[in-house]
Amino acid sequence: MSPGVPFPPREVPPSAWPFDALVLEDGDERPFAGGDLDPGTLIAAYRAGFFPMGLGDEGRPPLGWWSPDPRGILPLDGLHVSRSLRRSVRRFEITVDTAFEAVLEGCADPARDGRWITPEIAAAYGRLHRLGWAHSVEVWDGEELAGGLYGVAVAGLFAGESMFHRATDASKVALVALVEMVRADGDPRRLVDVQWRTDHLASLGVVDVPRREYRRRLADALAAPPLDVVRHGPSPR
Image 1 (spheres, rainbow, N blue to C red):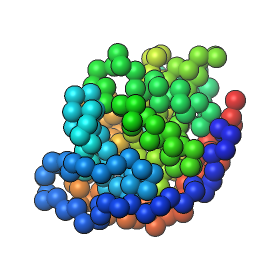
Image 2 (cartoon, rainbow, N blue to C red):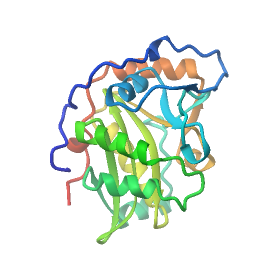
Image 3 (spheres, one colour):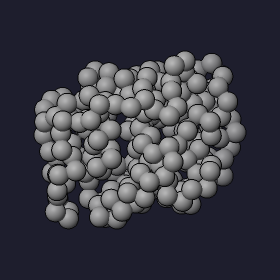
Image 4 (tube, rainbow, N blue to C red):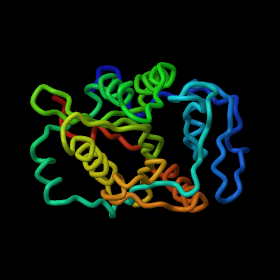
């Protein structure tokens, strides 16, 4: 575990932005623009079913707040692990919160297609990590960081933000490890949110749910105890 990452997370000031008052019609995915990336704003957004991504090229300003309909989630009992992926899980070493900045850097690599993580976004999630809200799962091949993911844990919700790989299956291994951590205590209210379903994520069991259903599941997850991903995760290196 990274030094100084608290559990439970440190309290953050309330947001000045009324996310709970933002209403979208079914099927309307238009983002809201404005706001800031303060810790209290980010946590309020996740609690209301929103997440940030810039509206400009490669995630540049203006800042947008998204709530897709449908929403991609990974059911805790729906994870698909192929035989080859099981072999990959055994091949790599997995840690939690030991290299958050390195995972963030890998996800923000400017050479990646669809890059959207700006320096401002990276700095904001670095702050959330130091406050105990944002976490990383690292996948190691020896001493080399082969892949990983990061996201935000709010009560029983884990909102995945981004993942990357430098070795075959490394990002998938990170997701497998995350699901195992989230479901470790057997609480069925816990929720893994991946924002959008892609073909890559669908192969692992990600499904689309209507936004109304997502919000119902989110309410249940927010009523669950805080998820201690480090306590449930692999031992630090």
